[in-house]
Length: 340
Image 1 (cartoon, rainbow, N blue to C red):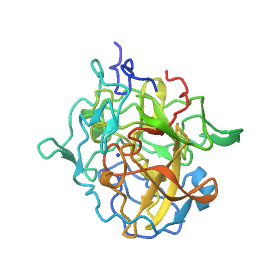
Image 2 (image 1 turned 60 degrees about the vertical axis):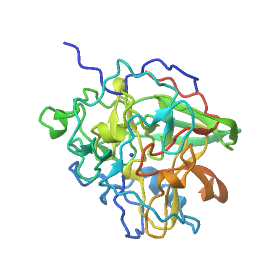
Image 3 (image 1 turned 90 degrees about the vertical axis):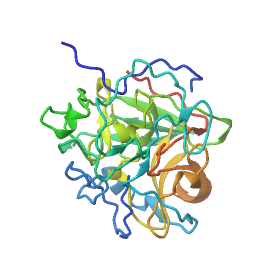
């Protein structure tokens, strides 16, 4: 008997080709990651695990003074992003290359953390897939080659642990999401612009990799294969990741395991395929920005550390709100490595 197809089965693109932290006010001395036990309420807790890639670049978090937003998102009542996608850039929405999701499969049922009536979901009570599996063999590299940044990765989380996949029938998460996929090492290479530039017009994100995070794991956009808010519906592990078919482990948002909590700071946590950085930015209260603080592509221009220089430049920002990271491409994306 064949296994059910899981969310991340890619349907044909029908248009142009081309999730989070409890509001902690604690200033941390070192970047730590919240990959502990996969139980409700620990998604953004402090962890003993530190990403190898973060350790190799301790100066990636810098103090800034231009994070001045005042609003914040309640992690227990995050606006649900279902149906918040379309064919054009729009603040708080996703510009999706794919708009037909017929035949897609997703989580089997909605958990108690979802409130359709209120149009919100609760990240504090959402279940996480059980298990703490280590990947000591994980490796990825970032190097420059001419005008390009070349990222090579096996897609295993460096310095992090994952949940146990396939999801076991004994795992409470199984009643909602029967992900049958295992996590497998990949051989992925992305060649992205070293000096990203704004495109004449923004472009859509596809149901494949849209970036690579600082621990070597690929980033997908905010949708599941049914066109729903993946962060709300899919049951993920303690680092907010899970595997798709062919074993590709991935995130739909900035993983809490690599997200620092330092107030008044900006931290590079990955790169989008158009070359622009993906950052975790916090104001003096330790809060992340909201969608309203960002543009239609889920980014803004401010002072950040990029290639060891403080520069005033465009970048994408992580939020608790959908679409979480990249709403559309501000620049011109490179051709993504082929997806199985």
